[in-house]
Length: 162
Image 1 (spheres, rainbow, N blue to C red):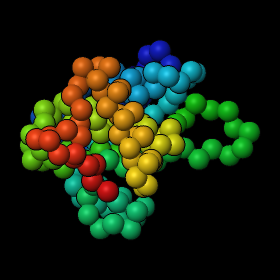
Image 2 (tube, one colour):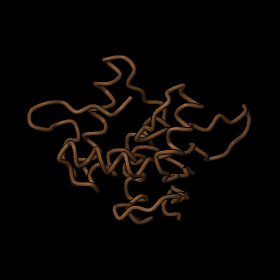
Image 3 (cartoon, rainbow, N blue to C red):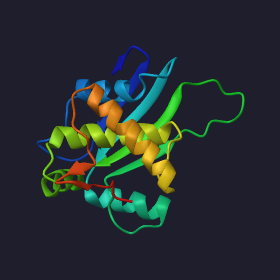
């Protein structure tokens, strides 16, 4: 799916009633890229827990599924291509998290897509100051498209699973 400045491929490899449509993914990616000029290519792969766990183990040495993995493009110097990278989202884990955290499923999808795109753009949350900056940016982007602060829940900050 393409649109202004974004070429997006969505690969759905698991069954789930809450997986958004391509238009919704495009809107969320576009919101995360709203301050970036130029063309951008991203693939979002929606997977089950076994694939998420295998990828998390292989690439992060963590033998458990995770909600979102980001794979920024590592293009050689001199290659001028708009590829930003790939996101892998585990639908069953995302759904359980939304339920456990009392969030609307679509709001959690939006958050994880935006969170992943920000990783593709180089943002991180390993250090407290980086985490504060990334959370503020996520919250502002989500608010701009009508979603609540993903980190507010019953007065406590909710964190993205490491």
